[in-house]
Image (cartoon, rainbow, N blue to C red; front, side):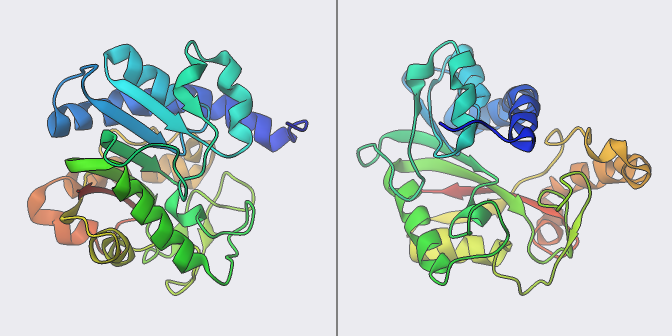
Length: 255
């Protein structure tokens, strides 16, 4: 691969630390509830695994974990103990047979499907590309298995993950093509790909607010956000989790 730009190297260093934390504190408890405790009989795939620390952490716990990633983050794979678990591939064309996995995770990926490079502009056929992505994830998931997805909420006016300066926020229209809503996720995976159902998940434990903590507004809002994220995990508040009041979506799709 070509030499990394400074921001790419910084992203890799950040994700090397935080993706492992997220896997241990959020993904692992979720998978244990949904597909059972760690077992080599249970196969898990991370679509958009980035630097691969999530795959490494889940494999250490006992799952048969694999990951795919098409981008520059593959530069960090040489740091992993079992790089053979990681595959250069795109979520629109996965190199696995049908019904290979009990669970898939794909965090912060769907909004980039059909996007032009690392920008928030999209290709004319972006929706068709997202339908293909949904079909591929569904194809390699076993019946009764689960797909866990995350993305900034299109219906919330601020995007904290795709700011031009990487540490602030990006204001956007709820009609823009780049970001994704709960309704669009439902359309992609239930109506288009034929999955059985979808529901929002709580955000408690998902974020540590390390980047936003570098800003005064981030330090002021973090306690409020933590309380709100815990509340969004309560089943009676599921309508709020799907609404414009929620800045970030994590959903569970049932195959």
